[in-house]
Length: 85
Image (cartoon, rainbow, N blue to C red; front, side):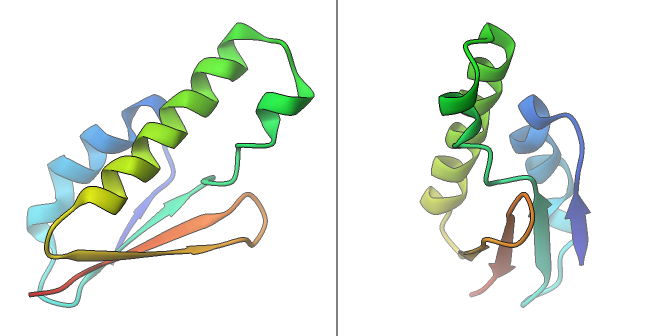
């Protein structure tokens, strides 16, 4: 199990850095994936960029081969990505 809760703009980098440490059926849990509504609440350019980065990360997770991702709307949201063959 790998848990990612770090600089939001670096999630793809962290995923790629540690994914090779997973065994078959291993999990990567990513925190704070439900920031999409933040875009509606603020005009801050920093917040807008953060939302874009998290959307890019979700697209990245959804495009991975040999991985399956499920999203949980608990708190700020989680993505649970399972390595499958």
